[in-house]
Length: 493
Image (cartoon, rainbow, N blue to C red):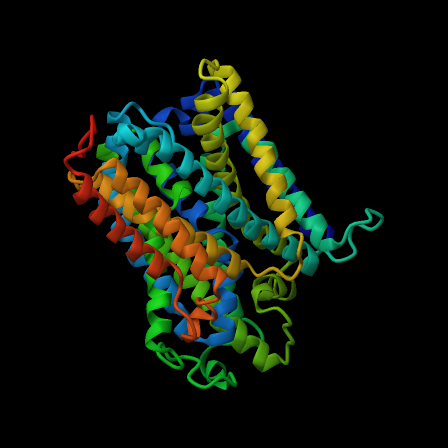
C-alpha cells in the first residue's frame, strides 16, 4: 500500500472525527438533539444522508458484484429500489415528518407507533424495538464485512504484529472510527458525515466506470461483448418470473427502513420535503447507474486483461489499486469506507435510540434526565456494535446476502405498518401489532426454510414478498375485526 493512499485515508478519518466533534458541541444537550438533530436538518443534508445511509457498502461491493457475475439482468434490483424510493419520498416522507411531530413529538419509529395507537402503545414499542435491534445488528454486520474485505484485499500485510487477520483488523478499524463520531456527535454527526460521504460515493461511482471503460486496456465498446456469459448485456437473460419479482420487490423495503425514514422526521419543515426529494432521487439515480456500470465494465476489463477475481464483490477495490494514482486510490477507498460507515452509523444510532427510548426509559428509568438518556444511548451504540462485530467475524460472509435478509426483515415488518398508519384511518392498534409480528415472522421463517435461495435466478422467492403481503393482510383483517373495540386511538391525518 502506497504512503499517499494511506495519507488520503488518514485525512478522511480525521475529517469524520472532526465532524463528530463539531456536532457534539452543537446538538447533543438533549434527546431530541442527539437523536434527531433538533428536527433542523437542511433538505440537502437530509436527502444525501438518507441516500448514503440507505446504499451502504452494498452500492460499491454487493451490486457491482452481482452485475459482474450475472450481467445486466441483476440491474432489476436497482430499478426496483429506485421505484420504491420515489414512492417513499412522495407518500411517506411528508406524512411522517408531520405526524411524528403531531403525535407527541415522537423521536423514534416505535414511539410514533405507540402514540398513534395508544391502546397498544407498550406492545408496539417493545416489539418494534426488538425487531429493530435484531435486524440492525445483522445489517451493521454486513457493513463491517465490507470494511473487512477492503482491508483484506487492499491492506494485506500492512499492519503486521497485531495477531489479527487483515479481515478482522479491517472490521475493528471500521467499527472504531464509526463509534468515535457516532457516540460523540449523535444524529447531527451521522447526518453531516453522511452528506460528505454521499458526495464522495457519487464522485467515485462516476469516475471509476469511466476510467475502467475508456482508460488503457479499457472495457468500452466491443470488449463488453467479449464477456463469456450468455446474454451478459440482456436485461432478461436467465431471469425467471420469480427471479424478476424477487429483484424488483427490493423497492418494497424502503417503507420500513427506520434508518432511512428517520431522516424524513428530521427535515426542518414539511414544506422542504419536496426539495429534499429532488436532491435525494437525483443522487440515487446517478449512483445506481454508476454501480451498474462498474459491475459490467469491471467484468469486461477482467476478461480482456486476463484478470482473475476470486471474489466479485471486491472488483471495485482491485481496480482502484490497479488503475489510479495512489492519492486517487486513497480517495476511492475512502468512498468505499464512506458507503460502509454512513450506513453503520445510522443503524447504530437508530438501534441505540430504540433501546434508550423504548426500553430504558420505558422499563428501567422512566424519570431519566435528558443527559442520562444521551449517555445511555452512547453505551447502547457500543453494545450493538460489539454484537455486529461478532456476527461479521466470519470471513465467508457475503455483503449482498446479509443486506438482503436485513432489508427484507424491515420491509416486511414495518413497510405495510408505516404505509397504513400514515394513510388509513381505519387501522387499529391490534392490527398494527398483528402486521408487525406477522411480517417479521413470515420473513424470518422464509429465510430459515431456505425458500429464498438464489433469488436472482428464480430458484426461490425473496422473503420480502410473502412477508409484506402477509403483514398487509394481517393489518387489514385484524383492524376490521377490532374496529369497534379500539379505545382512544388517534387517527391519521
